[in-house]
Image 1: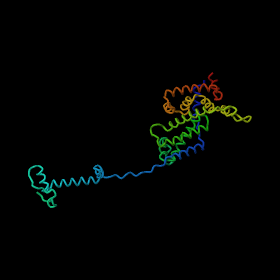
Image 2 (image 1 turned 90 degrees about the horizontal axis):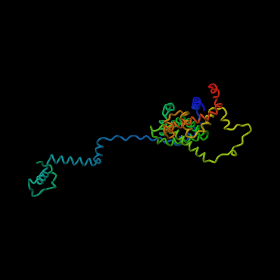
Image 3 (image 1 turned 60 degrees about the vertical axis):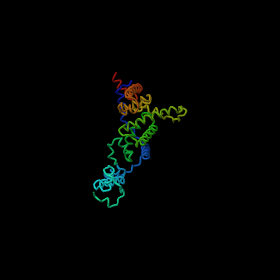
Image 4 (image 1 turned 180 degrees about the vertical axis):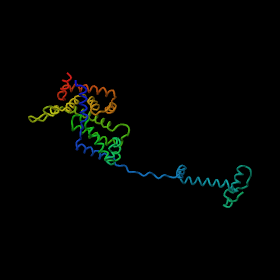
Length: 116
Length: 200
């Protein structure tokens, strides 16, 4: 048997040996690298940030929906504050506090502005 | 990326840079890995041309896997050594399937010329070591080369050979014992005769 020290010395010598690849091999490897290299990815600019109003409009289903809901809310507020005569009469009729012989459900424009 | 800024960059970072289109990264990675891969392959197959083919194939597979490389999972060098190990195993199996070469197939040598084997055996210590390594069973040869020549730790060898650490320890121990026995008859070639006399 060979001594362990001698074998270890032989291994150490072998470990210091550098295997130099030939120029032809390095050229072949580099050619493969270039052939398989992915193309650089284009840089895409980030989308501009949108305002809070756009986010709210999206939540309600778009700008048109939001505009319609806003108009309906303003109309309700107006009717609540102004309380035009035809609306008051209709409310009383529905509550049963008064009776009407006739009710004009399509009042003229001026009637809407008549305050009680 | 400029050449000098890549000197301290890890293999994995170089591979990611390559995948992102950096040409210098592939040159730097080739310069680092190709000599090591070639040396390991040469120890396993003992044939320069075949070892170069294995080196090129291993690097090619590295370029192909680069875009899908998952960072932080395995060292690039460990991955490369595993590919070399598997390619050399495939090569050995292919050799075994080939018809055996007879002496009649060998070219005639001119008078006075030395055979290739005789030339290797002469006095070269490394040739003696290589000759003994080539006689080891394949798995023992892989384990001994990775442990004692490539200088790797048992866990890394286990990852390369896809076996457990205990199996690595067993293979390296048995391989080293077998190598010691094989080289015992070559002490004169290795220059150890004087030491033995001194011991006696």
